[in-house]
Length: 600
Image 1: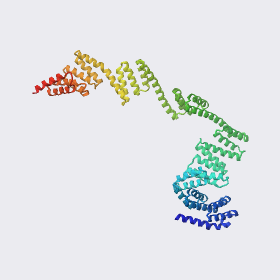
Image 2: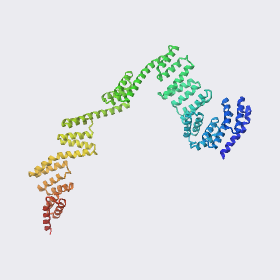
Image 3: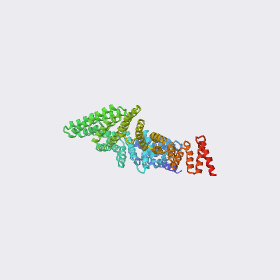
Image 4: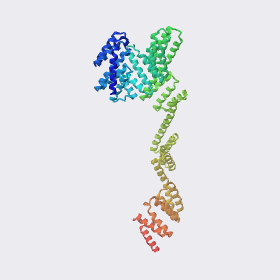
């Protein structure tokens, strides 16, 4: 209800306002065609011929673009036509009309409110500055610049802190409108205003370029060139800034072709662009105007140096391309050509080092990196590259030595294999796999002691590797076996004390071997060391009760000797249960029967 009332007031305003427009004084126009067109436009509007009224008023605006009263009336007609379309749910066209209304009169708050409503109807977050800026971007890509301007301005008004990029976008629209209007409109001043606002918020190369372009359009060549210079200072590699700088100096030469400094300025701009041929022509043109001009003479000297640098840069670009294609030798040749021109370029030495490194030539890569650091001790990438190169070089040496060791080991040449493994370990002493491989070579050669040491080192370095743990146990068994056999031989010949010593030595290597504990127990028993025999039999049973079931029988016998008959019977019973078909079952039953009689 309120919205309709507001629109009605605007309609009345148009009707009431249109009558004084017949007066030339009130209209503010000395042009009778404008007065006539306004009168015709108002009449058409009153008949609700909105499109006809708009066409007539636009003709009036084309005659007097800055006539405020004509623009205000045209704004009201567009708004009312938009409301007419909105009521008929033609939201897309209504949107266009409301935007056009605002374009002709930015103070038309009713059109602004109506635009917000129709945008909301279309699912747009009308109060979100980012959403409005995105609408502006879309309209700009569609070359609908006036409407893009409306959205950008709305985004700016909604923003708490205006973004420089948004201000530049607004400036761009005004600049486009200025160009489209045949460079006759006042829009260029607006463009300059917004570009400067962006520059005040944040100094960027882009903002300086924009300000420079607007100053160039305003014929302020000096100011334009100064802004282009600042843009290049901020971003020396910016082609946009370099090209803008050329624009400025070209205009300076066009306006004052007999001033040598203008030709020198253009020559310098062309030199930055790497257009050396035209740059040389401009320096020479300056010398024609002033043969003793020192700036021009110095410029020609600097041009020679820049040409060489550009040539070196061309070789560098070719080298980088070839290197990306893994054509390392060809890339290195291009790097060398570049180095012949600029031998003290630390970056070039670094790049050639990367090429040598990539092809596996670590020696020359290292030399190149060292040369880089000699020229620039703070070149961090070269320092890192040397660290990586050292590791790669070591890895390569280790691989070569390991491969050779494996070949020798497979051929049965264990001693030479051991030597190669030791050489590899001198490079990477903490490599568990190398220690393991060395252990296998020692073990294959029969050197079980050193094999054990290497397996243990491997396991200590990699505690989770089961293969290393298994290898340690296996080699200890290899070492223990001859000791156990010696113990058995001594025991067979009656040297029980010697057998005991050997069994104990073997158990230091294989403490969890149940059979050796059993054998030790038999030696203790034969040597009348019954308590130690009992302990060893019990240990054997603890480790392997099924495999060492005979130990129950011998424990029974030992306890019987000690007159601990109950325990003796218990062990005989355990023996019979564990080995019902065992060799000593009959004896165990007999001893149990006998002991039970004693008990009774």
